[in-house]
Each structure stands twice: as C-alpha cells, then as structure tokens.
Image (cartoon, rainbow, N blue to C red; front, side, top):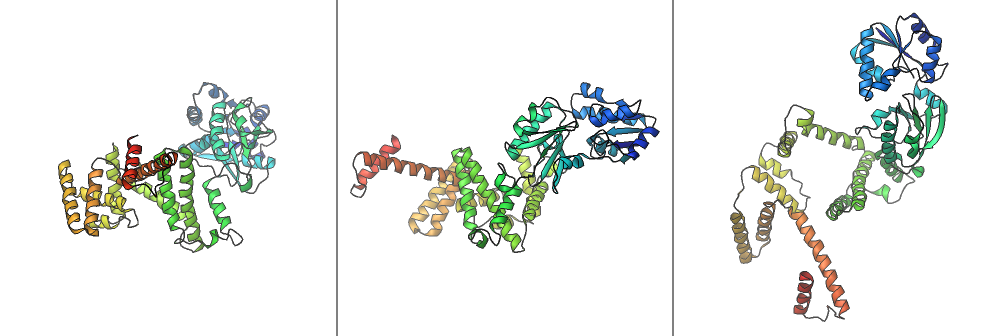
Length: 458
C-alpha cells in the first residue's frame, strides 16, 4: 500500500502522524525537495528519494505525473510525501484510481492561504485546471490557484485571469514568501515551482473591472429588491416580451454589419433577457436560472449524441440529422404535421414560412427545377391580381420565399439588407435635394423617381 503524507507548506508543518509513518517506512519518496516543506523533510530523514530529477526531464506535467505514478506503483509499500494536505495533490488523485492508498493529512494550501488572507468564502483550483477551456471562473469568492509550476503555465494563467478579472492585484506566494503583484506581472516573476500559488481576493460589484454570469444575476437580483429600481422590480414576462424580439434583432443587425463592439453589446442584451426572465420566474415560484441552464445543457447533451453517445456523424449534414432525430424524439414529433405545428407562431412570417418549407421538403415536397418555382410564382401572382385578396397575396409571398431559399438565401436577412439599403438611398436623396435646394413637398413624382434612379445608379 502507498501511504501519502501531507507535508504542509512550512518547515514545522509536518504532523506527528506523518512523521511516524515516514520513519516506519522502508521507502520514502518526496515529490520535490526544493520546497520549504521538502527541504525540512530531507533534513529530518535520511534516504528520501526526490522526484526533482523528473521535473528536468519531463516534457510536460502529464508526463511527469505518469513517471511518478509508475515509480510509486513499482515500489510497492512506500510513503509518498507531497506539499500541502496530501489529498489535494493532483498526482495523488490519479494514484487513488490505480491502487489502494492511505492519506495522512497535513496543512492544506487553503489553510495556509487563509492565514495570509482570511475569508469565509473560498474556492481553490490547480493552475492546469483553470487554464483549460472547460473551466469558468466565478469571481464571487476568494480564489486560490495552486501549482503554478513554471513560467509557461503562469503566462497561460495570466491570460485567463485578465479575461475574468481585468488588471487587478493578487497575492503571489512561493516558498512561504508572499508579495502583492498585478496579474499582468504573473509571468514575470523570478521563478516558480509546484508549491507556488496565488490568492485573488473577492471583489464587490462596484470594485470589479470584469464580471461573470453570477455577477449579472446578482446585479439583476439587486435591481429587483424591495429597495431596488422602481421600473425593474415591477416588470413581468408579458411586459418585457417585446424586448426579447428587439434585442435579438439588434444582435442580428450587429452581425450583419460585422460590428464586433456592437455584437458584444447586443449579445449582452440578449443574455440579460434570459437572466431577467429567470429572476422574474424565481420570484413567482415558476423556475430558476439554474433550471434554464440545466435545460439547455440537457438539450445539448441529448441532441449531440454523436459527441456524447454512440451515434456517428462525420459531416455537418450528418450531425444535423442526428440533432433533428433526437429533437423529434424529445418533442414527440411523430408526424410532419406535429413538427409544423411546433414551429413558433411568434416568429416573423418569412422565418416561419422557411421553417415550414424545410419540414415539407423532408417529406419530399420539393423540386429541383428552377423553372418550376418561377412558374409557381407567376401562377400565384396571376391569382392575386385577379382576386386581390390577402390569402392570394400570402401565396405569392410563400412562393417567393421558396424560390429565394432554393438559392441558399435566408429571406428574412435578405429583406433586412434591402430595407437597410433603401434607408441609405433615401438618406442620399435627401442630401442631394438639400444641396440643390429642392423640396420633396413641391417636387413632381417623376422628379423624385429620377432622383432615386440617380442615387441607385450613382
């Protein structure tokens, strides 16, 4: 059996239980003898084998971890000493999956950090976990980041923290020596080892430079408090439903304009709508933000079976087919009519028409001939001119939507582009009229049309 002993972080942190296990063992290994706790151990006990040589030869942390684990497993009954508490070491975590271990706890990095910066709300993470794409930093508590083993890791960590916190100060600790530095200097320190960690103190809303989704919900929660904003706290799902549409369209406009700054702003406004509705619902006992997040996560897992299950998809079309199949099962869509009826009635008519047409095309109701769709439009147009009814006008629009979609063009976006173009043309017409002392109120129709043609062809 392998006995893990936590050495703590200072020279005198080793417990009596830990010392007893070490002196009784035939083989004693220490992850590093370069830290304060490691150096203290090698002074107290002879014959301790350090893994420091692997830090020099290993290409990365994964290789280092595997080499240490391999050596320990081959050694059989032994003691493995690590800085900190013992159970908080990532190598120990992997070792536990492979063999039976016993842990004799020492002073954890969290306990040590709290002696430097006392707080009642703390989370701690390894630096390698923080820099992974999967990790989202929650800045609503004091954060301890451990095992900043080298400059490369410090550099990657700096980028992640700048995004989450901005240029704020943190407490940098190495070998028991602490100093306050700005995050921008995290990768500019003289040296690092696996005992190096930083403390990022909790910040209040008004002091923050960067925010998280938890911050957004906290701000909304404050706005709707009894002593909050008079307007925000009286809103309902119904009263702000138009805002959802407006914000979504403004985001689409920003995308169409390829305006990154505007995209950031409008995406935030769309996100706010989801958080605001969740807050309204929570106060009414309907649902919570976590219900919303859980629902969309379950949907993503359930509809990406080619990623999270046994389905196969090697192309975008195959992936879309998996999604549609899973969606049909999830929503109990047995017939094509079921699928059509579940297309939201609140969608703009052009978008809804396109979705209905996509479903009908999956039935086989489609045609490859361009002439067929042109003839269909002319037929519907003749019927409209004969009857001039709303129904026949709708048939014309529906047929035009089908033709436009056959070229891979989104009719809604196409019309939005044309509207924007028309506004720009009328702006230029007004500028020309002003420069020529012309007044649209007194101009003849043919002169206005001529001015339009000049702008259009200019």
